[in-house]
Length: 413
Ligand code: BGC
Image (cartoon, rainbow, N blue to C red; front, side, top):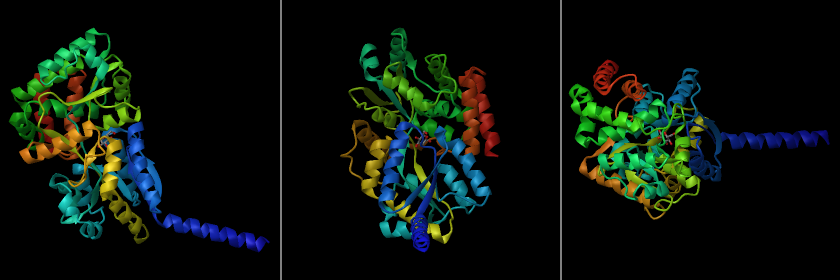
């Protein structure tokens, strides 16, 4: 009897061990309601393929905290299987030789032909696929409560002046006109859109080419003036607020609008809200026809031979066209491949896909500074610092433009 019990237990343990052979440990910062719902699509997809999911969430939009946690794991010689990463951070890890090689699956599935070049620039290093792109987000969006917009005249703003007029009306109507979370990355997200509203050429000169004249000149002073104007529409409790709580204010009608990447749409959908009915999505006024993008990619770290099968399975599952549709419909983003039909997407998603294609053709598709696609982390952090200090009233607009040029020059090294 005892022997039989022991044998059965051993068999069970064996089965468990076998199951765990196909395990992926995934580090990410998708912890809000909408993000978790999207993550669940990936988790379930992998589980249906027999892959065990070991979750390692590190909260914090923009991923700064997640990247700190990652450094600790890599330093300890024990990286997770797959890690959510943005733009230049991926390249940095590749340069350090920390990432694996997905070429086998990428070649078999023809990723080169369907993943846009703007993403491949980060998914590949030295001819090798090192990350699997999940989506394309963009930061130059505004999410408006429909009833609050109707009460403010009903017309979605198309210019900076029209937007200020709507914000004024919302404020007069007694709501928080601009729902905002006072965290550096959130201010930087808004800054992406405000810089882009001065023209895609200016965005490119300042945020991508890091041209000192653009960073310190009159247009940048005007960008900071606009940021200060936006600051006048936030409520007293904005400091430190998480982005999804700012989304919740707009969802509930306590806030008029939020200027945030399209992950905000994930929150509206999770709350059962419908675009065009409960909320309106527009490009930040003055940025129509241009897009500041960021793409979440899963960086695949160098792991032992025992984990490689599951890692490749995960990479392949992510690039599957039906997964790309199912996941991005929930996440608020758009697919990372050009051949995914838009049928399942709502109007904001369809607009996101069309805007991306248009910007790509016109040469107005720009990497987001706030989300790591314009410059490496040192420069990004320098921008965060100046933008947030100015937003919090520590310096005026002229001083901020001068400080920005100086901080970026120092960070560039
Ligand atoms: C990521 C999004 C995420 C957002 C807020 C961005 O950097 O690209 O996927 O939803 O941060 O957490």
